[in-house]
Image 1: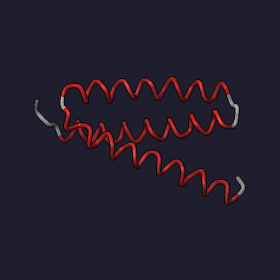
Image 2: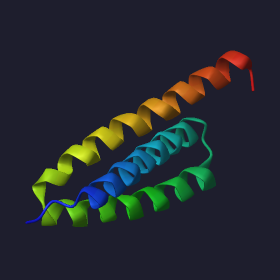
Image 3: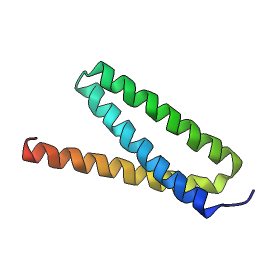
Image 4: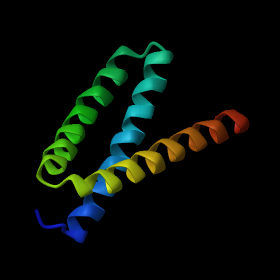
Length: 88
């Protein structure tokens, strides 16, 4: 089980994207936007599968996945909060 730094960076960004998409999915569900929520769900499961397949090969990849999840969720929640403050 060899750790690949380039792969870890890719997983970090994929995980950040996944969590961003999951946060957008949650926002769409709470706003009762069925088609938008369904599309975010489709994309999120695809990215989740990529992360899981890589994690199965090397357990050390849990760290870039976890930190990417943190960054993705933080970015979307911060963006949505700023959007609500400006009224857009």
